[in-house]
Amino acid sequence: MRIGELAEKAGTTTRTLRYYESRGLLPARRSGNGYRAYGEDDLRLLRQIRLLQDFGFELEDTRPFVECLRAGHRAGDSCPASLEVYRSKLAELDRCISRLQEVRDQVGSQLARAELEAEAAQPGGPEPRCELTAHTTETRAETPTETEGN
Image 1 (tube, helix red, strand yellow):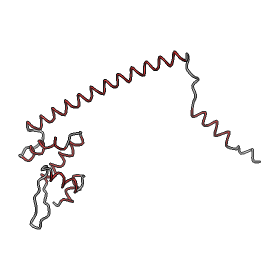
Image 2: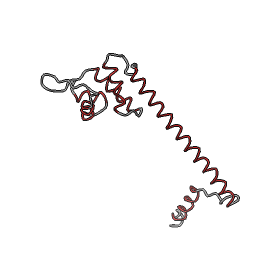
Image 3: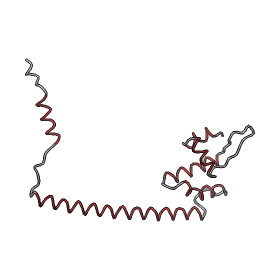
Image 4: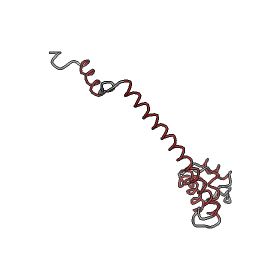
């Protein structure tokens, strides 16, 4: 298949495919007339790259998976280098989750402190106001009733 067809099947652009080719992730085979020629294996490579990128992997992180597929493995993640990339990504995600939990805890503490201070400053707090009711009352006051014009 030609580059446009491959791009369409992979859900990407020809520009992206040329970029992957320049990075050595997609083989650059040419047909007799000089056009790029691709097969179903190339589509598998692209799907693997796209899936990993959807998961947040950097393009270079996809290389071991691509190489694993090119080596003839059924799945791009059945090689030791691919497994190591998975381990590294999981460690990175764990660090992100840990940091987010710390931030969440801090924001929760700040909220609790602020609520206590607000309650102490105004026992009972301000009178609740229903924005919907206030808006409806204002609109009615501005709109003439049907009987006014008669």
